[in-house]
Image (tube, rainbow, N blue to C red):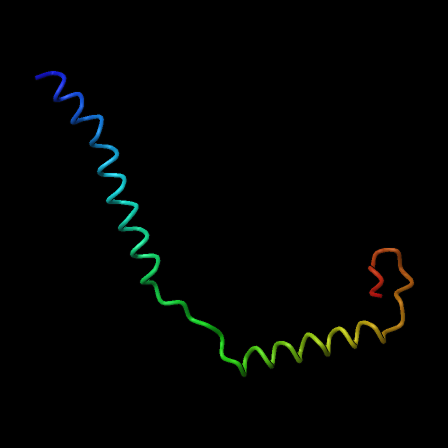
Length: 70
């Protein structure tokens, strides 16, 4: 009888863990993922391009504390 209880208890963790992992995976796959609107991505991209252009066309900083953008 003790051998049965030991075997049952040993397999308990594996059975409970596998059910929990399956449940987590199901929840993960059923989660809605919101994507940004194309318009928002386009606005961000244009802003980044403008900032890069401004950084490249500015006069280099003469103080030792600022980083020079190349």
